[in-house]
Amino acid sequence: MIQYAGETGRKVYDFLGVAPEDKKKHHLAGVTYFKSRFGGEVVKFPNGCILVLSWKYYLLWIVRWVRFWR
Image (spheres, rainbow, N blue to C red):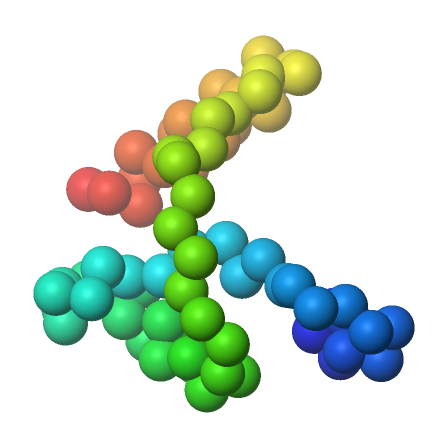
């Protein structure tokens, strides 16, 4: 997707989040390092929200989220 964005002349690519700058042990620290190697700038947006279209998949998402944060 990143390569496609570059090939088609896109100026903005949303990487969907990075670790806070003051949190070196954050669970997204490695991902943040990877993303930072592409250059660019970090743009902060308000927190997103989840739009529930299927309760079945939402319940599955909740179960995965709880297991991840245990």
